[in-house]
Image (cartoon, rainbow, N blue to C red; front, side, top):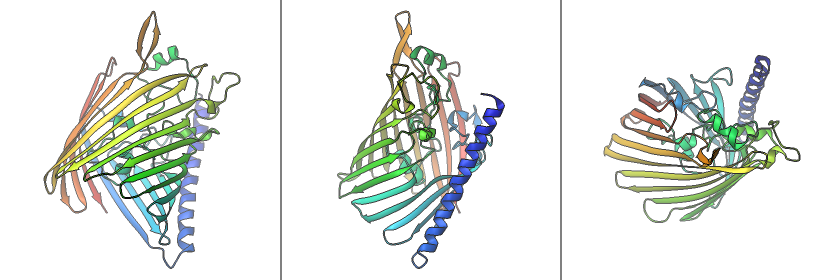
Length: 391
């Protein structure tokens, strides 16, 4: 891609992001003006300042350079219940590490309407959070007890986003770390979600115009369909299982075989989550199996990923926490009657603790270990300290 092409692409992305920001704020203001008697705007600000030592933290970079370990981050949550049943919600992110070549340092992460006539029926419409898994909801509610994200919600594989590639060629991109995700939690998709629950079982159904593995696929003519069932039976136990299918390639992708459309290349996800709490102990676990269609014959490749996380409150203000996660890539034919994984298997271990200095301020200290099997990067280890406060 030439510098001119890249410049035009960056300019288009910024224009689109500015439009989303402007449209979201306009909708929010119109909503307030339409329901002046009942509208009450609630705002919550979170400010994060983080320092690190050891290896570089770039292994945690998202697609646009935002990173939970960047030095300065701020989040602004705005919500208003326009009526007893209709609300509007907006989330704004500032991250000083965002690469201005690709995006502005401040952006709208989410903006949606919520219509909730009963607990058995809730409808979200707009730029909505992920339907699958449980970590996205915890992260949205600022309940991440560590600093980083699980691998399955952040890591970028070597599988390209904008071209059809054969399995043999994919092996040459192992470790590229700039391709499709497993679930990209940092970027929400535009769509509609219907959900509900009774005393112990819940459901979610959603349609979006982008893919969890590649949000820019919203430029193609395909859609993503997701569903989840969850159970909250008994004290301290929650479990869920979900499925998603989407067209994951961007529009105008290259090397599309004759007679085939971009939308014919699908990605599927099966994900389970489990939560158990007892006394001062809180645990979470998630597992995902992803498949991707590749090559001229749309052959299927896959990966598995999981994480296990625990938190224990030692004192009312002090806790310790740890998370261990893995990504295991399927082995594919490498020629000469041999097989190898289509990307490097990875392990991430993050542990540390937090101290609640006041009702609105928490101090966190963590260490993160990343191990890439059969990769020249091998091990990446760093330490970080964060001050997080609600303004």
